[in-house]
Amino acid sequence: MDGITFQLDKELSYEDGTLFVACLDDTGLSGITFGIHRDILKKKCIFFSDLFDLSHPGAPLFGTKTNCPLLIPSMIALKDFRYLLRFWYNELTSGQEALPETWIAILQAAVPLIAEETAKRAVRQLDAFKSSQFAPALKLHLASTCEIEKWIPDAFRALLVVPISEEDADLLGVYVLHVITTTKEKILRARSLAAFSIPAYVRPVVPEICHGRLGSDCEARWTAEWWHGTAKMLMHPDTPMSIGDLFKKLDMGIHISGMCQPCLHSTVDALLAKTELRSCEERIILKALDRVKELCTGNQRTKPVAKSHMEHLAKSFPAMTPSQSPSPTATS
Image (cartoon, rainbow, N blue to C red; front, top):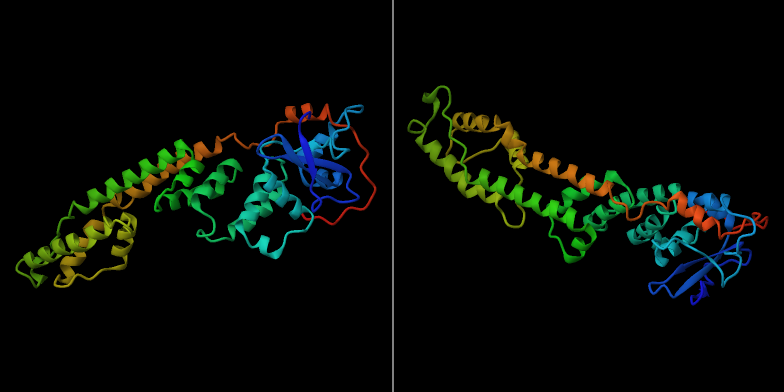
């Protein structure tokens, strides 16, 4: 640790602390040290529990002095570790607990340290936030880096209907971004094809019951309604209707001014029978979703620290007898 300067965080250091741990800042030349309790770290996360169990007698006394602390794994940001400690020591304010940023920070620190109960709590808290408070790009990013597969479908579907910002693109990565953009293009092509392919007018089984001139008036009304109503809704630039939603609307029943009910029913029934058209968008989305799941679950960026790495750390970490001094009450 030659050349690295450490400053004690007095707010998150305790007089009866038995272990000094530190996070480096972005420069890697200085860090913040926290005087905390070995027992709490051992209880809360598998990383430290295994590290302490693997410690070797006679190793350098890392963690016993403020200027010779035990370094937290580098993938954990200083801000995130601070929030994690505040949660473990019951020192989160009500204002902090109400913000998704707090639980995102806790989650990002808990996962690489294999603090499983803490990560589960953070996920439950984040599940309670509305999509407007928890952006889908960030949700999908965390689903990948923190291995929360259940978040992937909703986040992916949300990203198909919102603009992608530069910040979103950076979070998503080039491969997931490519899947999203190509899926949007495929959906647009499917809607365009549906919008510009007017479903055929179908006469009722008994043509005589149509009040028009052998159905010509009804056919004209059907064509006009499709061009001026349905096609516009499918191709709306801001809030387009999906093909699936169009079929749901047809299922509930529609009225077209000037078109008799027998002609309307026979024509709509023929359209509803086109199951391939009804499900075309969903098939596109599900195929793309499988690819996104594959990409996200294969992400290795913040997987928990490997045991071999912990063994390497343990060689330079002393075996210590857990302190008998009382520790502050901590949360899961």
